[in-house]
Length: 315
Image (cartoon, rainbow, N blue to C red; front, side, top):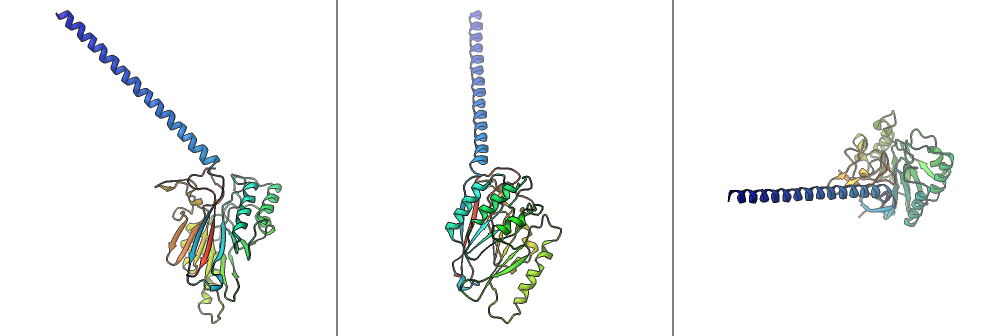
């Protein structure tokens, strides 16, 4: 009897060991499957972020309402482009498509808020010709305006391209714009500060001085509605933003890579505080373009290349 019990116990032990061994093998197989799937998912996300999400062009349309806008400017259309970083994910093909899409919108003005170039990309004379040819195709009823980004400062081709493609250099200056009436609006520009030895307060002072002079002016036809172009959004706290009704910026790419419920992941210097597409600061509307190109890493996620299209109304 004792021998039989011992044999039974041995059989039970062997059976338990076999079952445990099978369970371990199942767990190992499950872990392997999960690991393989995780790697495949990661590779798919990286591939999509690099080769799909960096292509195409989204048009983000906004209605901007402000009672200070002159009646003659009701429905005024602005196209805002930014951060092309030519030569990374944007080539002549993308610029030609950009011009085509902008012209379909029939804007009154087109504004560019910097970083035509990328400091990691060498621009050839042939590239310059291609960029001028593409940007020259962009049509605007009143005009096209541009300011420098930090990657444009050290590139000697910037002035040549901007001038010969029909844009007006608005760095640290302003222009009065008229449309079917005698009351203008003011359009001002502030160049990048990351690559400039002169600080934002000093650069914008002449523009702010002019705006301050308007408060004591007895003239009737002075600009009451004011727009400012700038590159790095975090400098907004240095420039007396209350002087402006609408401020348009770039640089942040809206984070370039974004995740649901988390938001922006890649926030460059001077786009740490302001990086999303819109902020309301007191009575100032502040829009930040997600840009067309990429910087640092050639990836986008949940944030396709885009241009902004604003329609201004006064009610």
